[in-house]
Length: 247
Image (tube, rainbow, N blue to C red; front, top):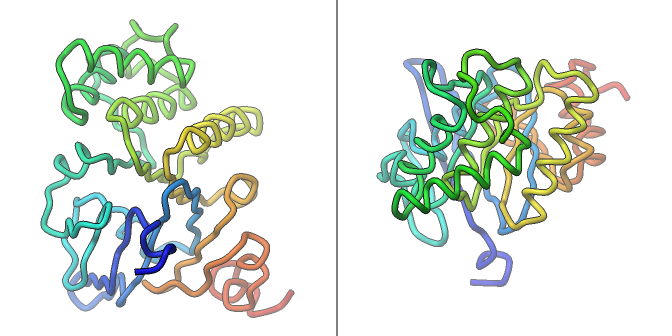
């Protein structure tokens, strides 16, 4: 095994998923190295959400394997993967209504991380502090605006003490200023050593953050490289941008 292979933290290997006659992922190979911030783009139906579901254990692949920290985890449940440090956010935030912001994050810390209640409380407070949500701790989750709901979703993920964080459309619906604040948080998380895979339709926001960009189309990876390389690839222009290969 060479140095690059030893560096791989999370990988999907020859993964295929079908829903009836619809082939969503087709023998897909995808990997994330320790410390990477990887962006994933692609048209609707490309397989991005399905890939996330396979990685975190919400779906089982029809074939292929998923590995994390050098061990195969294909048959491991979603809660067990979360406790190992593999966690995702959702495009539409899913807070527990009827509970406060702090209670939402504490539930995530207690169930997704390891340790006793005091440790869970400390992780919850640290996550809320990082996302600038401490002042909102006693508000009911359902009373939050969009940006704060996204911050709460991020806080809950951080409270599980992730090693790899999968972000699903976290920039959608935000203003330019809100997006800039969110981008700063994501870059800071990556700087603290959390590997990040970020699916995003707001491509300019994504390309400001990542050094590596992957484009999916019809369940396969058609481009993988720097943002500049990927976004000028004729195959990406045709499949994702709808330009028919024109530059």
